[in-house]
Length: 366
Image (cartoon, rainbow, N blue to C red; front, side):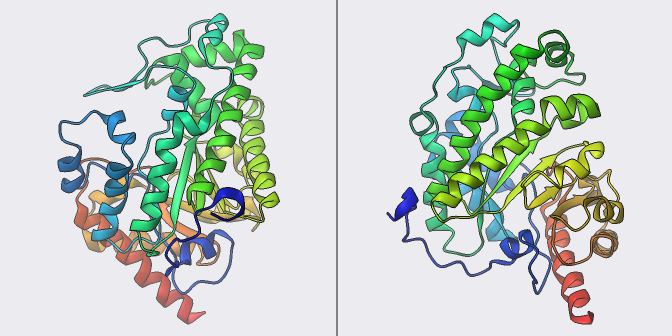
């Protein structure tokens, strides 16, 4: 292992298109990957997961590696994202989380009042608690054989906080938002605790072999602009800055992506938050996103996942329009949210192919 604890015998990277686009460099085609590309829309994924506990699967490096590689066997994606879950962070902090079939992630004992913060681990030994993710990343980096870069990820503090208080998914997030209005100090204490763990967790992922990082602020859109600026943005910035500073000391640099779903109002701020890439959901117009971010960042997104229910020719047209809106430089094609379980694998293939074909032509004609 060289300095920074990075295992250095990884296979040479053969396709760095995704990393180049993240940094705004020239590419021969627009790179493409999908959120939830390792997922239930693939029959082989359902087969591998059958009868196994979800978080047990997350704790098995071999299983995570296999699930991460499955989509790459089928489609020429330009990046892989490690199979894991954002809720491993609250678990590492001492909370019980179960995946309940038909209901999704469930916390039997959510945080109800500020005094419940005392139930959380004050100092989390990230290597001990989340080492299984690091092992999965290292194993996958070897098994991927340099085909494409491997992305590591985490949930963002506010999104994790909302799960920890709601006890699962929610439409209104009113229990979590009640904290913001009624217990702002306790909310900031919790958000800071989460931020500290997340920073260590992301650094551990890079040390294990992650070549890019994505931070998922999936619940950004239930905050208004003022609450976003107070309870989400400062922590998103802090994470990027602290991770970058630490990596710089080790002479390393990995591109970071922030995905704050439905936070239209935050686009300008997000583009000045130390992330190389801002991920967009499908409700944002590509041209307006380019204007509002002023060329400061690369953009990622943002086809409506439901467009994958369209016939293949239609998918191709939608992709072409999207590419024309974003332009081909400093752009990573993706969906505006994750793939749904009932989507046809062939249509995912059509999406990937359309991005590659149309963007190659567009770049040639420039």
